[in-house]
Length: 319
Image (cartoon, rainbow, N blue to C red; front, top):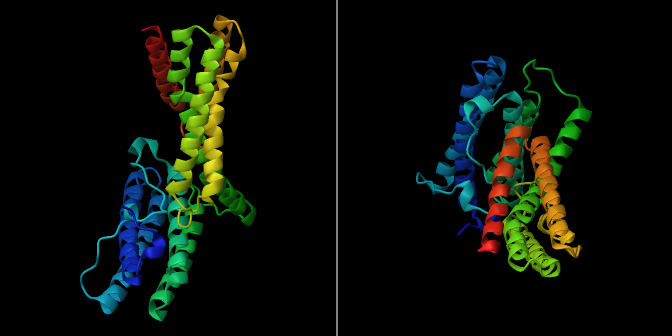
């Protein structure tokens, strides 16, 4: 079971910090390796940041040994609530400077928030000072990552604020909203169209669709709200994220349900099918704009999943 950050002791916070620095340094090493052939300047900047991260780890280890001895407990990001869950690394060919920069900015911003939260809780003066110093250094790393472009041109304050606002918008609104929209739009296809072809009755199908949309909205909203308190990940208040995710789940499910208010079954089904196509197109567009997913790739992934669920519902309804 994952631990709450507020329940960690000073010893465990230092152990977690060491683990985080080790993971970040390894990720930076991989980013530099992938970028080096085409973007040697960017790779050199990443190497410098990674060297700093190794220095952070050495300072943390030294303080831990002085305070608590040689044996460092194993405590990782996945063992503590509140951290963003990192997915697998994309293929080397799919990584460029812009994507690496975005990942590094999120990584350094999360590290800065962690050290700020940890320093605020620390009562030992030496631990508090080191954690505060590392928070400042991670902020500098975040700024360096923001400036890491192929031509090495720095950004001005206005662009920096706009980028930070966009990141927060993606974390706090787009990600939970997109998860809800995908769940509501795709997963509810099967029960709605199964009911439609099983009953051939618009009103009965409408009732099934509304029940599925409401149930999925409540379920996804609660799941999102309790998944992360936002204190470390920067994803904002759980209540807001839950409302966004639950609302978008309901919207995704009700979109292709409303056409069944049309009494004629076949007209309602044709309209519902068109709505499904629009929903899938919207999901692909959002992924393309905010998640840096190529539009054709996003469209293919969404359409394949949606069509499979859609056909499953029709087959079940006709069985």
